[in-house]
Length: 326
Length: 255
Image 1 (cartoon, rainbow over the protein chains, first blue to last red):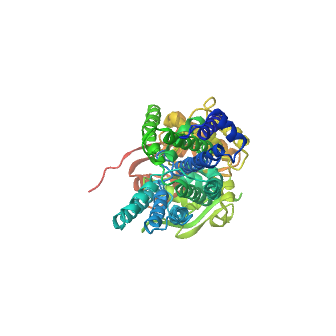
Image 2: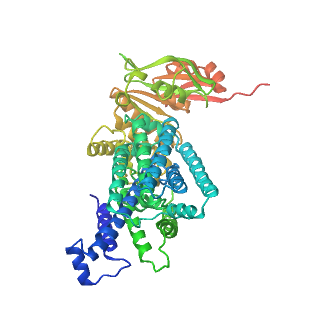
Image 3: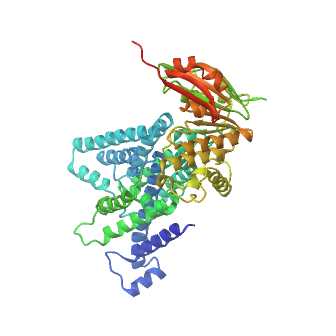
């Protein structure tokens, strides 16, 4: 493991520990000991059934977004790409919005299934397009239009929604949150995430070769068609599962690869694993911040990531621009 | 000697336009073939079509006797190393890492070793850890050439490897390709500098509007008639102490 990954893992562990120990309900030292020794005691419930699964959800979703972002930036050779660039996140959000608007939100797992379904439909479409059009610019343009279309349909759901209640619900869900998740939610997310991560890892060597352009990659002897499909499908699965688990959360997928890029010598393959850890770190920290902020109503996770992410990202861009090259 | 690369009666289109028409050529081990022609004559299309990067509308391309279309990606990569004209590099990878990408079939450590050796051959010893995007255009072109050399393939195809390089780097590039030919590789290069082509290549193919206008040793391929009809130049190749040299001026436009 590289020093960078080690550092990120240590930081992630520290934030996870903090996320379990800190919370709205202050626990005394004695209660804390009880919670650690007896997980089924009331303080134990707070720690292991409320805080821990929430932190785990944030970590898993953050890891998925970070990895998907790194895979997309590698595939499209574009530092501005993020998991949403191909329109998968927006389509996933549309799936969830439809379920909520039709009043099915109470059905367990319905929102998650619809979000994942939306991601899969968009993912298949994008995989098909990626097989046909190789130029990154073309893919990005398709992604932008798919994203806009899904966004327009989501707005249409708001527009035609008969009750303001469901509109509020959809909006609340779209803003993203890791609150009130249990271990079953985490378990449901890990399956598709693991498959997505496997696909991205498989695609890694293809991403490095694409650094030299489509033609060199095509002549390199690597099975580029398969590797490209794996990258797109993997990123779609990761971002779809992320949206299904916690709503639409921006900036993590964009910023995580940038945090690690310098440490891995700009290598798109080597950036994959550290980007996942960095994403987990960012989102867990953001969720902890959302919980700890003394606001009347808890801030939504997507709001926090955008609020802190945007200036942070501008700072990263500023630093990168100083050594900008053509 | 057997043909390493053979195009027979190859025709290719770009959209509705025929950009390469009934082109045939044979390239054997140990020789350097220069592919010449004005911009848009079909040089890149010839290379890409011949390597299976572009569908052919007619004719056939063979690598060591086997139709290009029948080869798997892995088989083709073992037979050909290709250096495209496009030199854009997506990420700021180190020079050694870029060069090592010429040998993706090797283990990472071995590929890096091969990459470092190739960098030394192109005169970039000590630049191994430097990011390619932090280099000058000429240095980057040499790193990409090192990646081509790292393939060690029996056929090396380079599209304008000398473009944008200073005279010394142009000569170094063709010297390195000559060394590859001497180890037994077949080499095909597109060039715009006719003097450089005449001196560095064993044979030349001159393309004009998608057709092969002439083909053969430099003196035979670049006759005054070809220079005039294809390149719109009034002049000829002359033998000087430094080698064949183009002495020509722009043909006055008529009408």
